[in-house]
Length: 196
Length: 203
Image 1 (cartoon, rainbow over the protein chains, first blue to last red):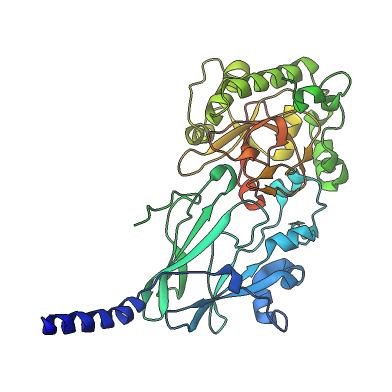
Image 2 (image 1 turned 60 degrees about the vertical axis):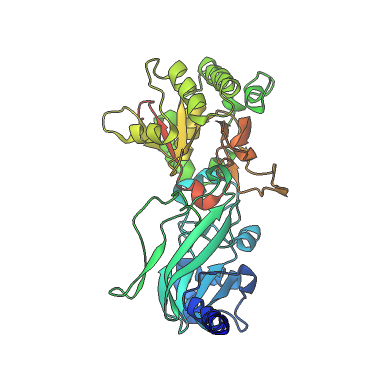
């Protein structure tokens, strides 16, 4: 009996590290911070044509593995704050007047989505939805299918998204040949997989 | 029930006959487009406009929880009495079929056509049901301003009014002309993907 207990205890003792190798982590938006000394030029360039306007609203969100080591980062815009300051929307390169919504619908410049960076600041993917939208919707980003210290899959779920309610765009999966995360085929406003 | 949309077209507040689009007046691009568009100069037909408002209001009351039902009612009454009932995703897919007679228009044109009493359907395909609406004539108003989940939705510019019904509890998707075409989706990025369709002849 003692041997059985001993074996059980050893087995349980080994479990945390075994599970720790394959965690599914959720991005904690509370950890997103504006870069202390401003957005470096190489990262600002990733924000596209209106980088100068967007840079003050850029934040970096760390993605850590089970050991607390930062393995990826997400470069995102505080779209809510930029929109409130009238700094988010452009029409053919010029600031939107904040009035003509049809013009924004028909000819608005795209706003960059969050960018997945390696710890060394190499862009390796783009998330399909903003993290800090100025509209309804609570975005959750999950990291799964860990291979060693790196997630092989990045999933997005948006809850309370107006009339769309809840949707899940196709997840991003690591494509070794392309050296980046690539979206699986699927509907942009797709149904979410059932929770296990 | 009187609605902002129906009162907007009343003789005391002839918004549908006024410049319906304050944004376009401030926008050189839109003004240029309008000046090249023969429809822009076309005077609105008050009877057609009133008919669209009345029919949309009736659709709203008949199908308060069914967007495809309310939109089908309007199409059936004003565009095609033989139109088959289709769910939102199917309806939007049917517009894309060559020879359907429906054509995609910008939101600017959608509003202009609605101001002439023409039926314009807006919508977005989504995995489960999608959502469709009817663009209404009248003066544009600011989006947002209503409370949803304890938060007052922000203004994101001015848009045409909308008739929208829905099964879910999102207040932005329930509009008898008191909200805008933006409000069912309530998010700029999503709304940019909403398409607008009409069977009205191209200019």
